[in-house]
Length: 250
Image (cartoon, rainbow, N blue to C red):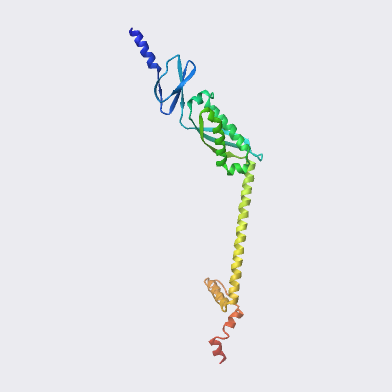
């Protein structure tokens, strides 16, 4: 009698299985799917029943570096990281043999196809848009597996050395072009201001004289300078009607 009780107690003890809060259990009875096991202590009768735990937390999976060819026939190497979680543990076990491996392989294939559909400029300039497209494609394919793909991030895009040199030369040429345009715009603006200043001085009596005195003042600040001053006709004309001229004439 005691032996029978001990055996029953032992079977019960080894039948108790713990499912953590971040896990779900998939229970089988004689090989057939029975039900989902929620967090807590659950009974799984040995021999007749079995179960598999599935982690439902978000996982970050590094997609290995892939070599792909863009739409304009440029060979690039690209890698990414994919974030996904299991929303239906029964599908993740029943619908696919190894959902972790399957998601990784699907991400690699989808990433190569997405790169092949865009040009190099689009790949470099619209990385977020391409990442979103890859995420949507993988999410649609994995929905039948009970997996939700939350995000895909392209980590690095490696270009051939020749292409790097070409892009560097193109960027340098673009910077030189902008510098020339900026310089030319400045010269045009300066010439307009000089022309306006010359017009004002030509139409204003004594303006050229004042400008000449201002220039002499700037030059005379350095004692090492020798000034040869030629008096403009405008300066002489300025004294024609002055009081000093009248005194000299008297």
